[in-house]
Image (cartoon, rainbow, N blue to C red; front, side, top):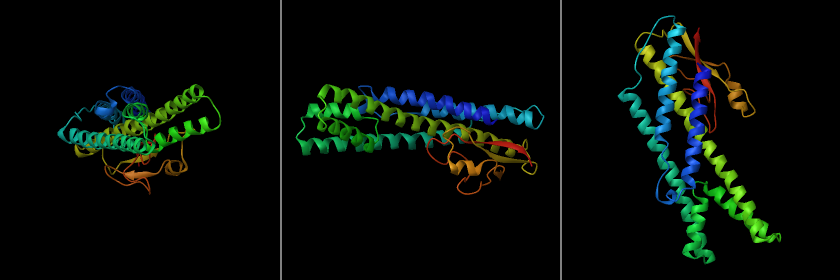
Length: 251
């Protein structure tokens, strides 16, 4: 099951990342919010439905139930709405900083609009980093054309990092929540016996594995709502870009 959950999370992450970049560079980015809801919904249900099949194989019975319920929809709506507000707040903060800079430096409205379009989608700190990067290039004697080319390359790099962070975090959160929801439903229906089965933490062993997650590897928690050792809580993800998941095994 771990492979299925990670696969769903990774596929969703890539779609979210690409969609965020497309939104960030679109003409409507300054007047709309990025909405990841469709991707969150798909990841949640895809992971949950894959887990239903895994549970059936694990307990050696044919089982089928529909995880599409009001409770599942409520989580998706609540989580997606929270995320949309976060992106919108970031966008507004970036615009405020650009307007403030325009006031201080005497930028025209056209110049401010250009900056807003260029920086929308970036974190405010990244937006400032891009501006400072260009200023440093110009102060070093570089011509404007070359400085603009390098600055745009740097901006795209930061935008890609931002998009990947959103994609990995949201994609894997939704996939893990769908997985947990399926487990809770299986326990509730008497399919998974919490006296016989438990959850265990599975890490993604690649160069991005952090020491915190590495220490949680193979730790256990009771079904359906047990807590992993701190800081694991109810399960991954526990930090941005976390690709961990959990599995079910016999005690």
